[in-house]
Length: 338
Image 1 (cartoon, one colour):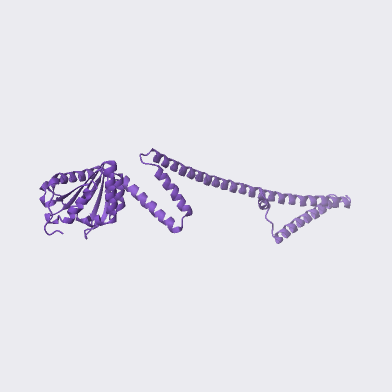
Image 2: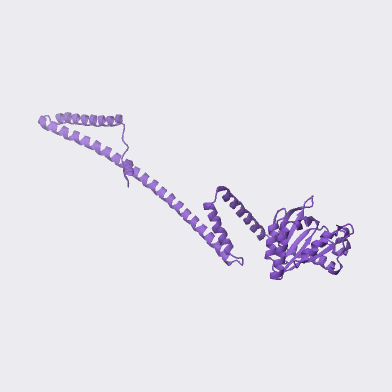
C-alpha cells in the first residue's frame, strides 16, 4: 500500500472548532465527575481525611477522562474499519471490472487471431492461388504504414472495390458502369477452351481503340499458346449494313486466328433471328460478359453473369446464330459502302 493510500486510511482531520468543542466537553465532564465524587465522599465518609477525598476524586475523574478517550478511540477505529471495508469493496469492484476488461480484450484478440487464422486456412484450402492474397495483405499493410493520406485513402477505396467485386462474383453476378476493358482483357487471358462473342454496331468504334488492340493481341496469344477456339459474329440488321470496313474488320481478325463471320438478321431463318441484338462474350462456356447500351447507343453498363441458366441460354443463342451463318456464303458489301 503506497503513501497516498496510507494517508487516505487515516481519519480525516477535524475542524478546529470541533476539536475545541470535544476537548471542552471532555474537560467539563471530567470536572463534573471529579467534583461530584468529592462531594459524595464528603457526604458518605465525613470522617475520612481530605487527602483521601481528593485522591478518590482525581482517580475517578482521570478514569472518566480515559473512558471518554477510549470511547472516542473506539468510534475512530470503527470509522477506520468501515473506511477500510469500503476501500476493499471498491478495490475488489475495480479489480473485477479490470479483470473483465482484460478478459474481454484477450478474448477479442484471440477471436481476431482465430478469424485471421481461419481466413488464411480457407485461403490455403481454396483451389485459388493463395500467394496473391498474402501479398495483397502484406502490401496493403505497408501502404498503411508508409503511404501519404491520399495514398492511404486511394488504397482503401481500391480494397473496398475489390472486396465488392469478390462479393458480387461469389453471388454469381457483377457489374460496373460503362464498358470495362480491363475485365475483357483479363478474362481473355484466363480463357483456356473457348471464347464466343457477338458484336453489334454499338461497339464498332471500339475496334479502332487502343484497348481493342490489346484485346486482339490477348486473343491471338490464347489461340496460339493455349489452343483456345475464338469465334466472333458481327451482327447487323439488314444487308446494306454490311460495309467494306466491316468486311475488312473481319479479315483483320482472321489474321489473329479468330473465326469471324457476319450475320444479317433479315437473311436468317425466323427461328435464328434474335431480338433485341446485344453484345455478349462467353468465356469457356462458364461466364458471360455483356454490355448494355444507353439511349445514345453506347455501352452504359458491363455485367458479368455466371449462373448456369443464363450462360446456357447465351450459349444456345450463339450456337443458333453461328449455325445459321454459312462461312462460305458471307454477304457481299453494298455498292454504297466505302
